[in-house]
Length: 600
Image (cartoon, rainbow, N blue to C red; front, side, top):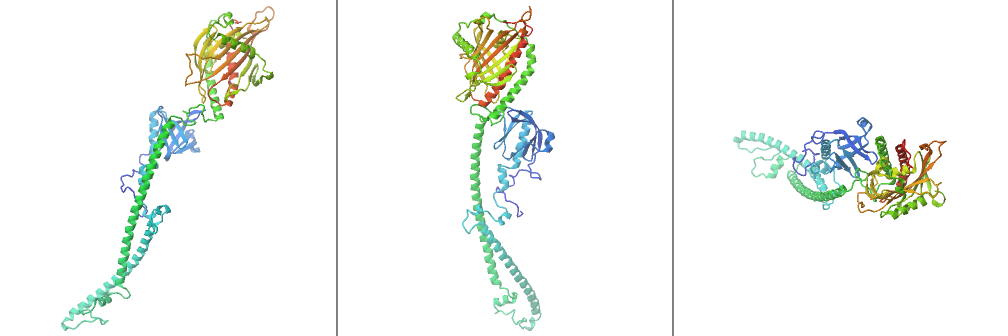
């Protein structure tokens, strides 16, 4: 094993995943293609070119823009991939506070993307047990000689750290190398001495018959039985080497090395135990964090992420007024386009219902709301026709040709209750015709574009009915519904010079068959439309034609929207929608009455 190779804490090579030469898990492939990405609440889902490469998910507006740089990217190491519970084509990718909502073309493509993303996450090694095994908990031999942090030695006794023991091993190694060199010199000298002694012994054998002792040149007898071992060592030892002393030092050095190695092993065992305890604590901490994360994630599933396609709005909405207004305006623009497309089809469908005689609308009737209807009629005739000047504080907010829209700002408990008043003059129609098409529910869907559905809860008389209707939801505002009594009256003239006057009043009531529900916010209304017919005398003996008549309309609305919405948004929407409503409705009446007999 090389010095720079790290030890595996598990002691086994079976836990290492198979990887290619570049270090990536085998089987990982890059992926790219078109996915629908939720952009924002105005533009919704948009097709984007998405690229999965090197554990990073990037997206571009189109494939042609890949060479200019991505518009956004996510590192998948810490990403959480969540397949949608109900939408089989959708997957959500979360990294900290960032969320990407993506939709594939079909469930098979979604599974392909999820599998590829999970493979890239596994390749990053973040948070997996295999990554802990690959990095290991033991020090490499290279790192062992390069020093340790203060944290790694703080758990050991002072003066007995692994670093100091390794320094001792370095010292022992140097001493041992010098001693080995010295002993090698001694052994070389002994070898030379033995060779010389063998030559002398051969001569002794030749001269043995003379029976004389053989002597060396230095005068020392080799075959002197009384000679001491010290003299023999002195004869064999090279000059200047203390063999006995070197042997004792060598023995002490090797003993020190063995003792230090034993101590190092003990320290490494203690270190491994310490790190194992720390690892166990971290794993337990991680387990608790993961459990808390899963619990929080389950709670978040009940609430959609801010700004996402599942975002739920209400009184506690975090969306600011500018974003709220942008979203409402975009939704209203879409409704206008849909209405323009369907307008041609509506005009082709000619509806006609018999118009009751005028006498029917001259009285209130005898139903249980008769007194309330009479009270509302009198209030509208008294106050709605008053001049907008003086102390009424009406502010002119829109002026388009003959049409003028006024507003008086009123708030109650933080809710905008601004009364609106509009005046308009329409040529070629009578007040009776305008009120007829405004009141009769048979024509309601032809000109009213904000209603999702409606039904007549109860017919009180031939000129009064209780109507329940729900309006189309304009995201991010909640959906509204309204239950109101609608009555149509002909106002009797006090003298012959007074114009022919008709009125429709709509005001909120309660009814057992249309109780408020959690699905919609119940709005309260008090609306009056007063129409006066002005006739200019025809020339000569000509009959009165539609060129000689004009309808003067006074429209007053007091609406309590209920729920919650920013005041600035409500006022801006009212300023935008009321003029459009009046123009749309009066144009519809002109189209319906063109070429037909005049209905006074």
